[in-house]
Image (tube, rainbow, N blue to C red; front, side, top):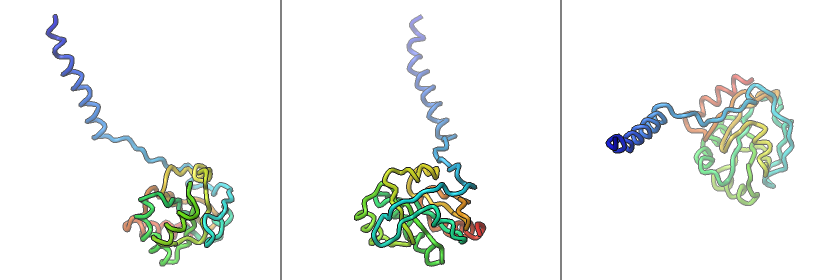
Length: 175
């Protein structure tokens, strides 16, 4: 009768191993897609994040021309990684506006001085309220906005070299 007690640790290990292996084989999707894709930009008006660029409001995103809205922060390491690609998009003639999340003016200025400033306007979202309204779950994230102010695409994470052509195509589709 006591022999089965010896098998309990092995059984518990087998259950733990099966659960672990299942997680490796079928990882859960932690990426939260915005429910705002296909919908008009929510109304907002944010103060300027830095003195060198104007403030940002939702009305600035309905200019008749497709553009990008980049959500970033100076404390975000992937935001540094995507900086060269944002500059490349700007050189390609893309209008890029930004929302700085929970950041200080001097930190944003230092970030942009060091890594480049491709942005026309930068709004400061100190409480992440606009970020949450957009359905953004983190930084960096980039939204393609059509000329009427409708969100047509969401790019989660940093923009990599391979993503530049795709974003240019998404902007073209948004015309």
